[in-house]
Length: 154
Length: 187
Image (cartoon, rainbow over all chains, first blue to last red; front, top):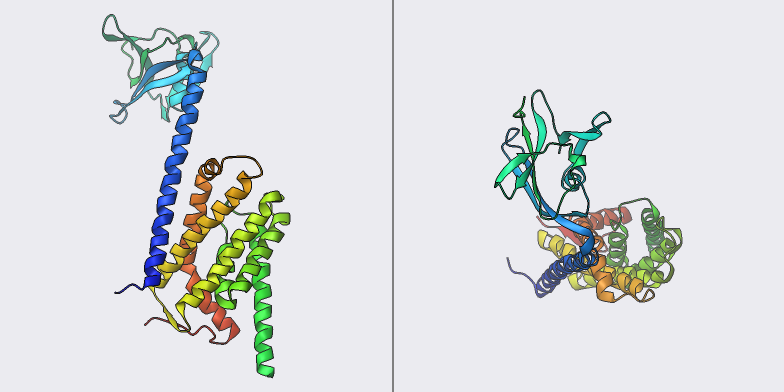
């Protein structure tokens, strides 16, 4: 099959279009990056970074890490988790705390619940969270984990 | 002589229908940047010549500027008119480049879809410039901000032209009942 000169010129135009579109997409993400970097610089003193792990091992064997998640200063664990996942929770007035019922559509079921831990840098081990997630204010660079499990105390 | 007049009447009627169709589809609710005006203008240019195509493109965008569900076009209108006129004009030029007799083939389908991609991009560049100049926005920034709209526009037009254009040419030929384009389907 022999292509005419016209076909070749038109195919070159198509190639130019794809180049232009790719450059435009690259430019778009570069501009977005610049805007967000600028925003982060402006609000740098009002935010902190935390690492959040969601452990679904008992559900489907996966573990998801959301490292360097940027959250507002003074944010609690529940608010931070909501920035990285879809969370369903129930507020219990008697405990003045919220109980997490589901994360990303994985609901508490039978003896399985969503429990949270924080990483103790001193002891080099995970420690059970002993309050509701909305009662636990985070600190900068803290590492936390949600685990779908049968609680150890049950 | 009488036969010639009947043919002219058919052409004028068909052109009017195409213009109405163009305007009707253009002002109907639709996904942003998915449009059928380009293919109709290109088709009319292809069938009736460069000037007819350009005229239809400019006229459609002029009317669209007032009636569009997205609001009054304002200062961008002349740029839209120019861009769509160019689309119709290029339909006529493409027809000339094919010569009197041509056979539809996959290569021609590819050609027309690539041409559509190119002139849709040109149209978007022209209209983005039309938006950037009055609002004192850097042109490059305006083009980049519109990336996803341009992408939608180019991809939808590429697919539409590639799949429908020569089919429409044949249908229009049958409607007119004349073989003025000498367009044959490749065996």
